[in-house]
Length: 443
Image 1 (cartoon, rainbow, N blue to C red):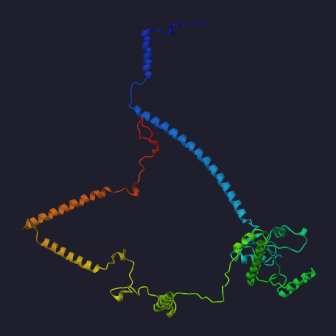
Image 2: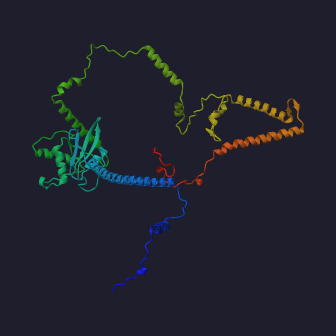
């Protein structure tokens, strides 16, 4: 059974009491004491600076991302540049052969001195060793003969065996021989005796059914160790190649149009009378006079040659100096003395100026001594008491002038390196604490 306790039921207040109760509750929850806080304007400035700082941080973050992307792009470009540089270096190492230029092709058996001959006549540094097949590719060099440029090609050695048995190194030489129009120099090292080489040449020609031609230029001997006949072999090859090129040009169709330009016309003698060179008499006399003057005057070089050499006779550059005292010619005059340039004090009238200065100094010193002995004011002699007062006034005036002069000098003082301070740690580009509300950014 439900029991009701009507005594616990509170009395419902009337409207006036209800209003008082509610107002007392609200009064308890609201502050009754007002504390001193920052001004509203300062709070507004703080939040505005905070927003500005957040915006600046966002811009810095964007710039950071852009810079990182740029760095990545530059790293890619650097890698590509290094790759192109390596490719360029590899392309530079490859031999550049001009098929239209005058070419000398060096070929022969392995280990017979082809690379040594190449190093002697050109500036190419080809590796030279004591074993065969040191040269494994084509090397191109250049040499000069009669002011013309010749390209010299060093090829690997060729062995006397069937074409099918030749390796890749030998095929480089075969390709150069087949496709280049050049003067071929075939190197052999059969024997150190020239007679044996000549006999083998004649035997080879007889076996082919040819007659032995008396041509000493086709087969030459040389030594790269002693450099004997090295240049003679080079000149012979260049001369034969040059003759061949000239002969080819002469047979071309365009040469007929150019022959008249190359022809040098020589005048034919009119008669048998000899006509010597005519030099005017005045010119001959002038030459004789000049020669006589040169013979009469001896230069320092002539005197030096007569007395020996430079180690025996020393030329004097002060011999012909014009001075008032001849004994001062050989005096050593320093360029700098006591930190001063000596030339600034050189004056022909320096003695006269010194006398004038000494005379002025004597007059001034005499006036000072006279002033110390007699103190006069308005034409009257001063008493000892007045002299003491005058000296005290002058001394006080001098002290005052010195003090006033030091004021300006003290104002020019600057703080030293040890006195450096950081006035603020706030970022100045954000105008922290430097601007009030409503100021426009003028950056």
